[in-house]
Amino acid sequence: GGDDWKETFASVVHTCRQYLLTNLPIAKIRVTLLCTLDDGKNVDKEVETAWKEDHFKWFQLTQTAGGARGQVMNRNRYVDQLGDPEAPPTTFGISVRLGMLVPKAPPAENAGKHPVASRLLLAALHQLAVGDPETVKVSGDLPVAVKGLSSRIQEHKVNVPLVSVSKVSSLDAALGFSQDTSWKESPVWEGPWRGSLEALQGEAEFSVGALHINGDWSAAQQAKDGKRICLPVYCVGASPNLKEPIVYLATSSKEVFVVLIPWEGKDTTGDLCGQVAEIMAPVEPMTEPPFEHVAVPPLKLSYCRGTSAASGLCGEDAGSLVEIATVSVCAGRDMPGALVEPPPAGQTPYDMPHQFLFVVWHANVDEINEPLFVAAVGC
Image (cartoon, rainbow, N blue to C red):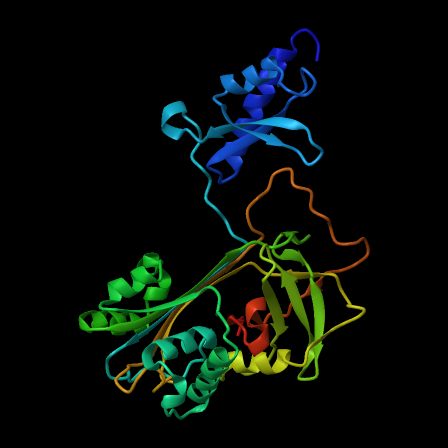
């Protein structure tokens, strides 16, 4: 390092710390200084001083797998005290927020029969309202299907992940329970259901459910056209119930997968969750997949709508189900300096058709063969 190595090293520590705090949504930085002096018992004090002068403090001692001793130094993000930059916003590659509200009110006349995005969340609301699903008689395709799903969940003792349900006494409390009061200021609040929802403010009780999914892709980069996201494929499946390939994408959670199902020209008014379950039940992975990457457009979906298709599931005095959803898909947080493996030379990513189903699947519900969330894109 030369005679001036201490000044150079201190400058490197400062630059690295500033870079990390500027670019990453982190609250603290920890580094391990290896004990290289006195037969591995002590750290180099001049090296330690460089970290201390940048406001790193002793945290604890540690030992590496190889037996070397180390000293862990910690530094918090000091925005007010030292003028550190504010943490950048956390940008997830995948963000899904779904809320279901069922008021005790007469069914709305303009509800329609829209498909629900999660029969698992609706089944949880059903169990909350009636307890044992076997004691309730329902009619209609969706109620019968959800009642059967509730029975399978109880029979297999499945703990449905990422969903929560409760009974609350106001619409504001319902939105607060779903942890997304920003819905009230977002475009999903506008349109024909705004008046209907606000008219429910005086209702005595709501059943409310929430499903939140935040995660990142295992790897992602911009496609060459700069408009789409290029994602590595976990596997490609084939189903006798669909002629197009079924694309599985890994996420930062080993239990959560995104499944993309081409849906050009197909019906989107029916029970999409049921159709997905039927397609995926017999699916088999291709031994020689025709592609290793897929190109998809960034997504920003949002809607607020009501459906009478779930009538009777949450009690005889329940009104029409109201669904509020937002879905965001992007390349994820920018990781400056990260090494991303490009698609193999000569291979073209599979271009996902304009119309497709965006499906979130959780390994914990494999046994009952049910998607966690389904949304129709471009349909």
